[in-house]
Image 1 (cartoon, helix red, strand yellow):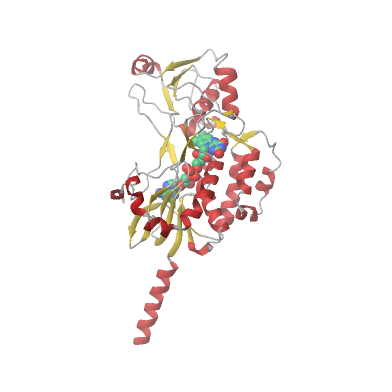
Image 2 (cartoon, rainbow, N blue to C red):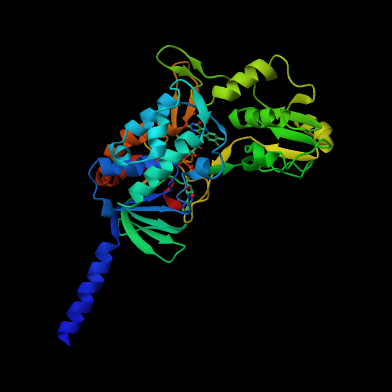
Length: 380
Ligand SMILES: Cc1cc2nc3c(=O)[nH]c(=O)nc-3n(C[C@H](O)[C@H](O)[C@H](O)COP(=O)(O)OP(=O)(O)OC[C@H]3O[C@@H](n4cnc5c(N)ncnc54)[C@H](O)[C@@H]3O)c2cc1C
């Protein structure tokens, strides 16, 4: 009898230890991929890393934007890949192909999505991965308790949220027939969603808005009305640093905005400053509307939507860190502009700088009192 109880106890202990991780990484978009790669580079045992994503398809760019013209030169994608030793262990034709594209040119996003799909598959053969949704996250006894939709539950000493964002809808009442930005950014889908009888409103003036305006102007559409709040800004090389490095237009979008929109816009395209008065006058004429007015953080179960984080370190709470488009690093450039650092290379650089600090998470926990005013602890 005693022997039986001991075996059951040992089994229980084994299951508990086996389901305790040093790291839980939620999200397998570019930011999550960078974090898992760098954790492996830094010698964290692969079986101590739990990696969770509902798709494992390189996040939003893999799921929706593979045909979208990218704003990153090939050379920077190669830098991204070369920043991580683990990525280079992966044998992949798509990765070899990446080196054949012209270094100083921008291409559609699939040129980086396909290598990252292979790298994801490779890293999943090493770490413990769950294709499922995070449904619960709780801090108890100095560890994070993670619950998944597939019924799995486990603890992790430190958790990285790389959970991404989605396009925000502004819900203007005057025009309710919305085309989602994800569909609008795919010209093959967009062609079936608009007709010559449509007047299409496009809200926004950044990268996505310009690409949608370009696609619409190349399709048989009645009229296009662009509601903008800010003038176009372009990324500029300042010799050693870039003005508007994240917020400015680059690549195909920059070229088209400069040469077509600013100089000789298509005759069926009108640009109107987005005021309430303008919306009341013009929106009732629109038959469809596309919001390209920014992205908002995906909901994270167990956490409030406006959860605060330290915009320099990504620290959210003891042993809880955020990265990627949902928790971007914020910097002030030499001209005094505040920039949200978004893009693969920004995520990689931020992860490289922060992981050594996050690895010393105990230090973060003991020093937590000093950070108290940065975080809203009640939200946990
Ligand atoms: C149109 C467009 C073009 C862009 N072009 C470029 C470019 O050319 N170059 C560049 O460097 N950057 C580009 N970006 C910016 C940026 O690189 C991407 O937005 C990138 O997808 C953000 O990566 P991420 O990992 O932070 O988030 P995401 O890609 O959104 O990934 C988040 C992941 O988390 C998962 N997830 C979320 N919640 C849960 C949950 N509860 N449970 C389980 N999984 C969950 C999702 O399934 C997803 O896989 C572009 C962005 C857009 C919108």
